[in-house]
Length: 417
Length: 94
Image (cartoon, rainbow over all chains, first blue to last red; front, side, top):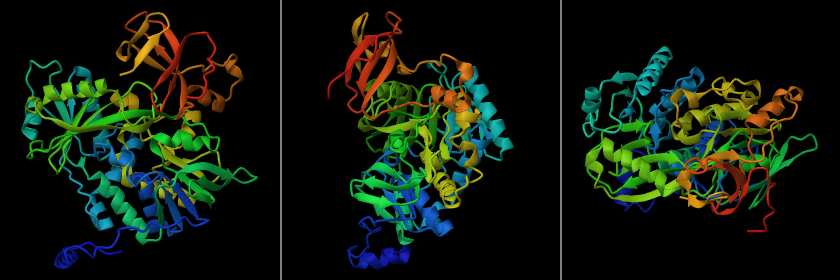
């Protein structure tokens, strides 16, 4: 692997940047691997990376039906935070946040992690109570989160409208200063490059069409559009398509797939210094380093794999953004799109073993999976390598829907995150 | 926004409706006979198909009645809507 450094940059500048290596190979699939990861998004690539980096398992293939990071990894609004209510969630998201803090150095790849602060607005008495409850719960778990008055919120984010004449006035905000954003593509590319350098085969344009099982019922391999591959361990990290892949092994999942939309504006000078979220009026906004306002909207009302979504959902969000930030009212929007998110009944992920021996699943991250990417890959790799759930992953087992030990982040925040 | 044909009121815009999730999930007749896994399957597991999906809608801001619908989850095209209690219509290839 060609390492990136100031010196490497200077040296390549002298030759007109014509001699940079490809960042990962594009190998033909081998007939067999120790582990096959289905899904080449951030979570799948991170899983492969940590399998090789921490567990010495490098005979691994990552199969991606499209291109790397072309699914939800490239479609989300890149918000990173760890201020979740339940202890189990706080543990795994904080684990991820700690990995974010050292990720660029770890991968020798600039993932542009920017802890600029995530501010979650309150518009009602209930919102205030929920916000403060989160803050207290977070403090008990050693996670930073603090309460701001409307004036303090405006001081932290000057474009914010805190006028009393709004339909949903800002009554306060919870601020996680360590929260922020990162460059989504760079996360996929950085993990891909790191995994490839350790021997992982990254195979794009390779769709899994079947899961083969031996006489005992255990996983024996996968069938793909580029041939059959033998393996005893399959990790499904397919986000919105989890139900489709798992059905190939006869496993029904407590997951429904919905389109979640986002959009970006024309690029402008730096105007928005932090991430602002409002769960109540469904508005999520930050500004990318390129200058575009990155805006997240809500999910559609129905199960769909269309990767588009209804325009009225986006309109609703832009109305809220226009009221929160009157200065953005005349901004032109450049692009909007949808990603297919996998929602679970308790809005918490499903990580771990399945009823089929050798088949592992990491899914259900729903509307907020990007922030968990490093932590998710890290604990899933450990789970696959050992065949036992990582302690942070254990509470998120698929079996919790049978035992009733749900981790209810839906009720905790009243909406999707 | 979908244009949904309510079997009672005719075609109306999607925002008059609430989606009620997967259709034809029958509540177990003898709940005490079920083990935890069967309950979990009834409560939480969903088909979530990529393709033809039978789902419930409620015309909340209209007649307020529930009805069923067959929709393609890739194109979002609605193939047919039908009243509660009617069996799932057979539809030909798309």
